[in-house]
Length: 302
Image 1 (tube, rainbow, N blue to C red):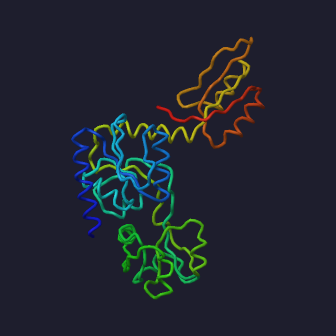
Image 2: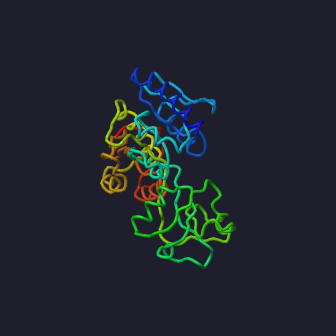
Image 3: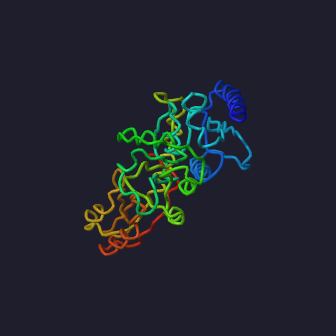
């Protein structure tokens, strides 16, 4: 509690100064997988990022922002209170916090699934949760899920390694992040029932508030996400086959078609989904296209 209080006071003082200077105040995870991925997407979006993992704040005056590196679990609370303007955190952490913050957009990394798990062969459906003890690190998420389904159970908060709670007699069932399921199987557990939550990294703001400078920040991130999902495709094709080719490569707002210094041929350029691009090249080649090129897109504005 002392640490939290000290951090809040320090951040509040620092953010008050940055707010008066008109900088957009952005909370980022200070460690873990979310931190690394968030740093990558922000660098790709043209923002400065810290080089020292111990650095708590960073001002990027050229882009009008200040970054605060915080515990992922605390980010939604700072944003919900209005201490900071924007945050990157997990959807699970946002829902679990109960903060007055809302998801603006998913960021496509840090994906995870939350499932119930119990001793192998003992549980098969959610109705069996009635009257049980459920151990989890995400009390808010699990409690809300049970309430929506009218299931009465005791939710026990544990931080980390909840798989051992059943063996130790603390709980009957657990609710946790499931990736491959290998950890659960080693503990003699198996998942059951529907998924509690599909989580990923999300961009959050205070509920009902759009801070100054936010739209530019959001647009940059969207540009990187699109660039990661698409590639630029260029190819040459006979003019008589353009209509058929364009059906395969319609682009975002229509392809660019330019005449070539070769009678009866044109050059086509279009953004195409990264997934399936190789198959698309095969189809275009079969149609008569030649000089087919794929190029990475680093950023875009649509």
